Length: 422
Image (cartoon, rainbow, N blue to C red; front, side, top):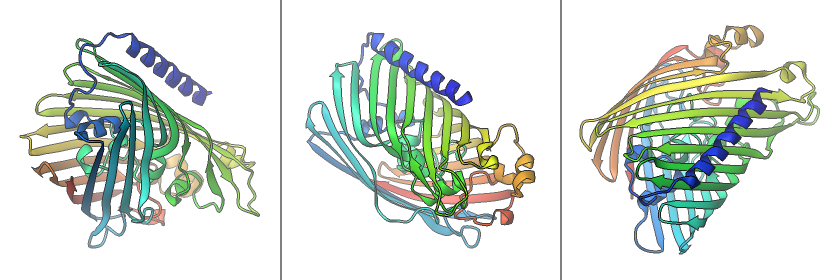
């Protein structure tokens, strides 16, 4: 019943936003430039890169060093530290027709045991504007697309379009990045703007999630020998931005469906998993300040496993963060963030889970205080450093930390990163 209610809320909001956006009379172009602080979608990222010519090619590379006092992040970081977090991407944009855009990106990403450096197709899609005027548009995208939720998921692998080396892990889990980042989908979008009322945009997609990686399997079915397979999934987001670009607000929702295919001889039925997160995002920008907060409820439910423990497993997680960024000048800025994750909002300290499973209670929550600094050395080269004081291990990857009993509840993380783009 809770899943049904979440889905109805998401559908009604997106329908209302779409209808509202097309009823507003706009007075300035949708391609008006936006600051880096407000870049929040793949469309806006490519729009900011566009120049004359039919084909544009851009790329980026970043390398981080990570040291933790306990626990491991992106490899063996608790010893002498590691250089195990690397991102190298190349993307291309082409407009063969005025209303047709083709976009693709290949990515090589190294991030611990769950992610090798093998290049993969990050996204590749065709975008056709069915209706386009100076101040409003409606179109369709088909292919492998970034999943539209929150403010940062669309551009999370580009260091220049995220606020820190590590995004708030309570919302943007790196341990299930492949599942969260992109999917094969058909997506409809609409946007309109008004000099007085601001910009309204919506996206709604029907997709096939990517569930074939080890981190996703460990997160949802632990070490069971069977495999996950995708089922039709729905995703949507609506965004409002004020006319002066100071205020942004978004509501995002996902109705994610997966099937579990048991291994031969496994005493389980062919079960299904339904994951229905709902996200509320808000941001306020001034010349020097950006204040951002996002809140999520994440309901998960297991069905038809023919196993009493699994079939009774359903709970709602809760996540939120508060983040402030202060810009001393265009080159130097600092960040302060408080990030909170509860795997089960009714068992916030994890004690009930520990009593049932024997796992550490601190594996069910995480509170992270982050302080960071960014130095934009040139428009193409950026340096970052950040410190995390963490209570809990709720967002750590089980692949990097296979023995949960050996993890420490209180730990520190220090990271530095160099990034380049062209």
